Image (tube, rainbow, N blue to C red; front, side, top):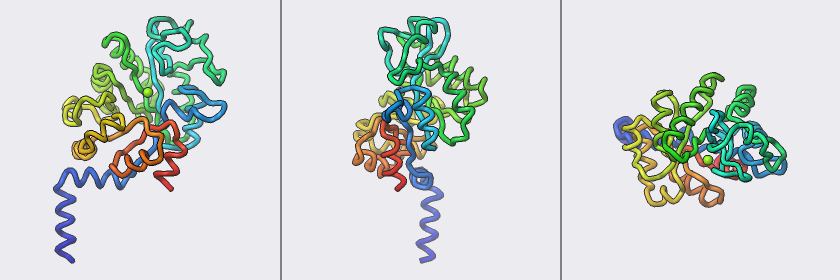
Length: 260
Ligand code: MG
């Protein structure tokens, strides 16, 4: 018995993948609300209300999408063009006229940072820098986000994600301690780790094709996030696989399943 114990200790101490798995199991899979908790009545995607609801749930994270306007304002919205307005091609004045489906005006990043700053919730903001029409615009948006998050002193309560490798690179250069995960699913954990990134945040189908990337990422000390997982059986399968975060449109359901 004692030998078995020692053998187990040796295995856990010296096998990087075992340590990675142990870490994932010890901390457990956690929930990120995709575009906030937006499905209930009175909420809307990427709104003040959806962030507040996610903060009230106390889940791990609440995700938003950001675009940089021509005049340097950071707007929160998913679509490249929304109600006929394309934030990256227009001004703040045009964007602020837009009403979301719950009647709120389209928020700026700083509006949501103020809500986060006031809240005592442990929930973090997961900021997706959208891929703008030019890589340089994605870099500019990333740099502007890093600056305003720093100004509000919220560096420890924010994680960054992007499909744009240029945006990821820029965030890492400007904020080397920040959590930065790449979304596109076409690079191995090792490639991203070599760039200094801290996570992979891939579509569920990527993990179906490359389940080994979970352990590979953990062995490198990286986090693993999966999107966008709304079905109960998929949530359970991803938890089984040992991912750290599940990004979902159904944060309450996800919490009930992974933390019964
Ligand atoms: Mg997003």
